[in-house]
Length: 115
Image 1 (cartoon, helix red, strand yellow):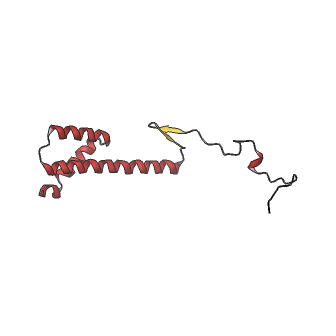
Image 2 (cartoon, helix red, strand yellow):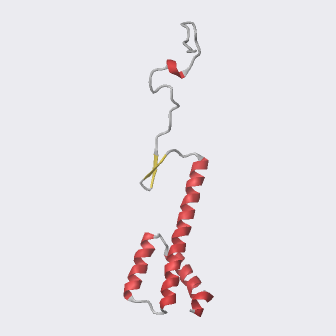
Image 3 (cartoon, rainbow, N blue to C red):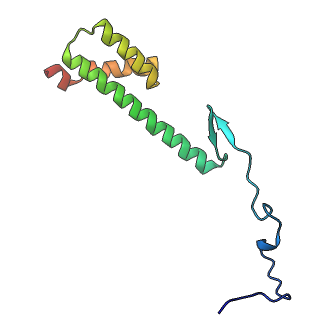
């Protein structure tokens, strides 16, 4: 059975509105560091901040792993490896303070000392 509204059927639905007026207006997009965000609500910001924190944690982990591998290979680091470390620091957004902290951690690592 097909339903066909009668002319007296007044349901006040969005279908009666002209196109694009049946949508809730959205705030304009916000751009942060060149990336477009879809709003500035609290939970979204917090999720974005958590994600940024997790990504940076992974970046520091990756950088520390490379330092550990180089240290395990040899106590002396070649100029080529030094250049690679510098480039890696830039790409992984590791600050000077974080670099020093990670170097101390690597130099005090018992596993690396035993190798």
